[in-house]
Length: 87
Image (cartoon, rainbow, N blue to C red):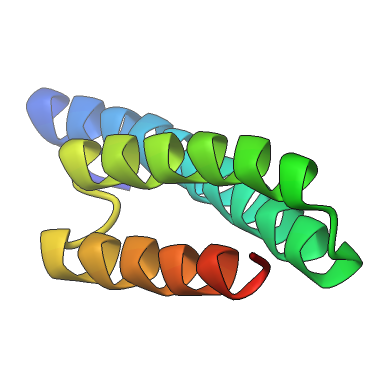
């Protein structure tokens, strides 16, 4: 544990940021898994609604810095291809 007051504050804020990022990443993964489950089930309408939510979640994660923009683009492209195969 640091002795300097500002360093102590940094440790606390870093822990809060870590927990927030961890929760956000977990929520993103859950959303992506729901899309994958909808695709596997073969239900086109459920897959489309899950796709919209998943794309929005990926965009928000990229904007927050949880995902790199190219990683986000790759995920969205992959999801679009999966959705188009259902048609």
